[in-house]
Image (cartoon, rainbow, N blue to C red; front, side):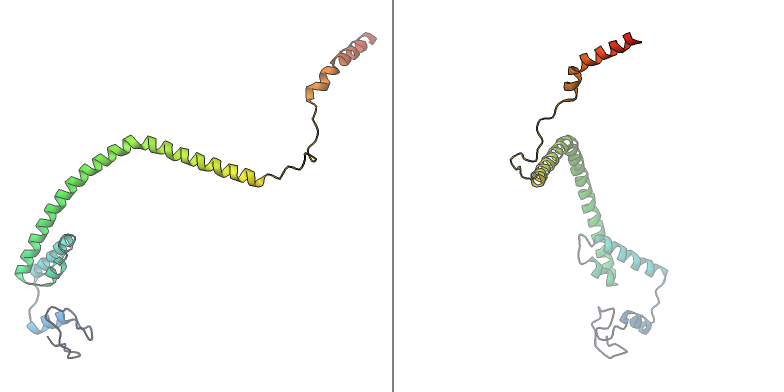
Length: 174
């Protein structure tokens, strides 16, 4: 088909002109005088829908949807049915895989959580020890450290007798 705008020859399968981008499908319909009725539009839409569905199994399905032949519509229908069978088989297989994965998770989750917690504690402890060793000043012959500090109760017990005697003396003087 020749493009009516630029005159470039395009293959019959092209929807748009290679050179200028003119919609050749619209030009073809205008030249042929064929109008698409309601059923043709529905058929085309269903072909495109089935082609999109069958595309994950049959890669050439969208190309068949673009072709408006009856044989292409039948091929698309067959590919859609085969795709649905494949999907049904795969979905039943996946449900079994999901069940096994669920059971494995039920059994292994407590152990895996304990291992993760232990690893976290180990890394935290190692990090804390590393920071503690980095932040401590070097010991300098204990010059800066004070001598032994007396406890709070050390002097109070020595003076307890003095306190009791002074309290008794005051009571007698009154």
